[in-house]
Structure formats: structure tokens, C-alpha cells
Amino acid sequence: MPHAVLDTLRTEWEQLDKQHTMEDLYARQRRYFGRFDKLLDQATAGPTWLRNPAIANVAAEALHYYDDYGYFLVCYCIMPNHVHLVVTLPDAAPPLLRTLQSIKSYSASKSNALLGRAGQFWQRESYDHIIRDAGEMERIISYVLENPVKARLTDDWQLWPYTYWHEL
Image (cartoon, rainbow, N blue to C red):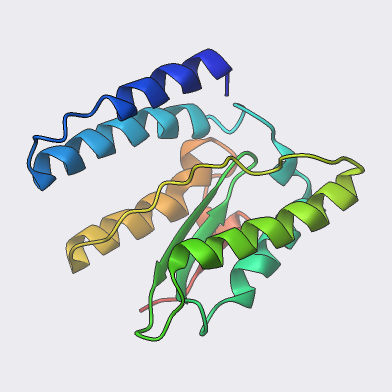
């Protein structure tokens, strides 16, 4: 993703007025990250290392590793340039931020080794969102699973090799 776009989006996010209600902030957050999604959904912006099956498999392995411990894995979609993940958290789960840091650290190290490179692999930021109800959960699962169709990588999400869905 071009740095100028990221800098502009980051500046807009930092300028959010803290006087707004939680619903106002939530709506602004959705619009803010929606702009990222539009860029990412093209599956061409930024590094596309996850297009490599070996790298995508590293990411999938890392996501499954924490299932039933750090979270309950609902679904994911590994796109060429980003990953969508939907989880539910058990009561005794460690903080999700810590689990995601572990996933990113492990998968970055292993992926960089496979690519013969060093340095940052994942973006530092991630967008996490609390799903408020069953209707929203259904909408988000559909969004995640349909992502490769939307990006015209496949005609059917079930044919995309890097989607996973554990029906609730």
C-alpha cells in the first residue's frame, strides 16, 4: 500500500474527536478501515507474499495452532496481501493481542526464511472488531469467506484453497 495513503489514513484516524459517542466512533472506525479494505480487496496492493502457497500454508498453520486455546477459530481467508480472521474467545483465553503477536512473529519468521529475506513481514497495525450480535457475525463471516470472489481470484469461495469455516 503506498505510504502516502497510509500516512493520510493514519492521520485521519489520529484526529478522531474523543468527544463523540461510542457509536459515532464505531461508525467512523468502520469508514476508516473500509478505505483500507477497498485497497486490500484488490489483492494487488502491498506485498503479495501470501500468494505463494508455501507462505499461505505457514499462515494457515499458525492460525490453526491457537484454535481451542487462544481462541475458537470460526473462519479465515488468506488473501495474497492480507488475512481475515474471525474468532470467539474462551473465558480463560490470553489477551487476543498477545495471541496475534505470537501468530505474526512465528509466521513472519518462517515465511521470511522461505522467501530468503529479512525484515518486517506483517503490518504493525491490525483491525480488530468486537462482533455485537448474531446478525453481525453472519454478515462478517460472509464478508470474510467471499473476499476471494470479490477480488476475482475464484468464482466460489469454497474453491479458494485458503479459506476455512467452522460452522457454528
